[in-house]
Length: 229
Image (tube, rainbow, N blue to C red; front, side, top):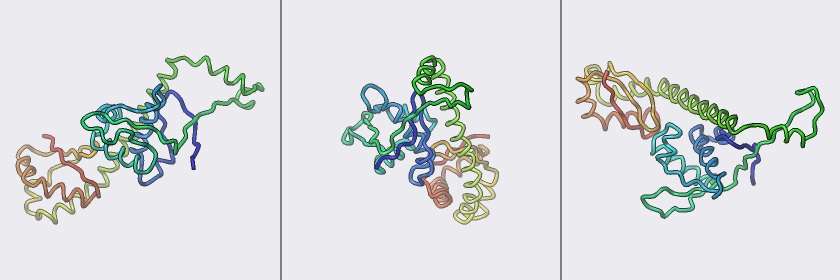
């Protein structure tokens, strides 16, 4: 059964139905929209590399891989080159969600009664630069939403992580080498933290324990990247 949500053109759709699906979420919805946009080309498929998608969406390559696999498993996308190695795979939109957009002008909007056909004609005056501008604004909005979501994730994750870490490595080691560290951001599957240079060696030695504590606090496999103060 197909759910017809909206018919769109010229920009990357961000579909509420996918955002609200706990198995997809915001990042999966953004990725689906980007792949869908590629699928509107003459070949009807997306052959963009994972690196290209990651760069365009500001995510890590591993995040792209994970969400592509999930979108395929849920039936939103199909990998039509599953056995391909060391080359970009090709994906197609399965049509599980059909995206379309219809423009209309009502009498109350304009003060003038217009037929559907005249409304359609009025939209032919929209230039390519208008479409490009709208697309850039839409993509900028998506990136801001992703950054805000990651900031909220950091704020929620950090105190849980610190509590788990103290129990794992002991309070004395924690106070000596980790208490002054501060979270910076979550970039895809990596938590960036900032700490003094003297703590870096100990943090590297304890990396396995740190990432185990991250997983326990977040339920995700997050790598740890240490930035100098």
